[in-house]
Length: 294
Ligand SMILES: Nc1ncnc2c1ncn2[C@@H]1O[C@H](COP(=O)(O)OP(=O)(O)OP(=O)(O)O)[C@@H](O)[C@H]1O
Image 1 (tube, helix red, strand yellow):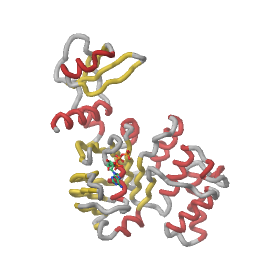
Image 2: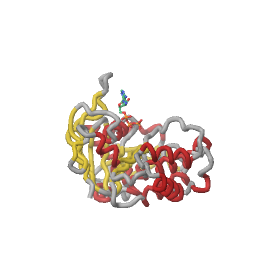
Image 3: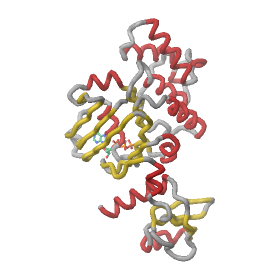
Image 4: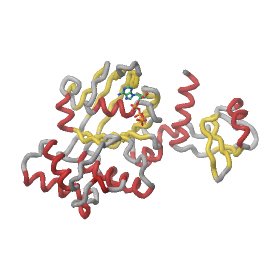
């Protein structure tokens, strides 16, 4: 069993932005979802775990090794798919993966060839192996990204916002691939897409303004708000009135009509219907409660 223990992790950038503020997390094998809005600090946390930057305070222990003191240990065991992969050189996918495998320390030519071939097959890019990644679609690039992250059998895999910008079909394909990676390694999926976490992750945390404001099993978390989420279609111009009168956690357009969702222990007023909450409702409720405390 792999274990990643993060304690009191804080990151303040040189410009004074405190992107992480006292993060505590314990992550074991399986898929862990890290959910947060843009700017919440997800990439900062992922980069710090991947030892691409040092924290200002706190500790990260991976399998009993202090990886801030010994970043090499996590680097040897890590597969990382960053949010931005940068510019791809104009060489074939196969050559590029082979090159990345050398960088990952797979020096035996036969082993390397076997791994590159197996990974290209696993991510369904084998038939495109002679094409340059530069010519790939967004979904194909992300699948290539997973192939490079899986080189050298990593024990911890970090994928940062992997489905952003993918169309639904490509996104599904990518998530299916991710779910096949297995339960024997730690996979951290950082995303702002609630649906991705709901479908894939037995454990999750919500990050907001550099702090973990909730964590647990998605189903158990949603159970906490059962019977407390109410919905109503309202005239668009009345949003502010409802926001003043009730705990409006979210506003959505549904078939051109404005639907609000309200957090309340009892029916707010006539015209409201109780709904079965989903993870998105829990996410918005958590943000709402956090912001009203602030
Ligand atoms: N290198 C940096 N120098 C200064 N500030 C930074 C740096 N990187 C991130 N930030 C700031 O830290 C905060 C958290 O950013 P971060 O990229 O970690 O969030 P995120 O949740 O990954 O959001 P996004 O999905 O938009 O990247 C933001 O206010 C961002 O502007």
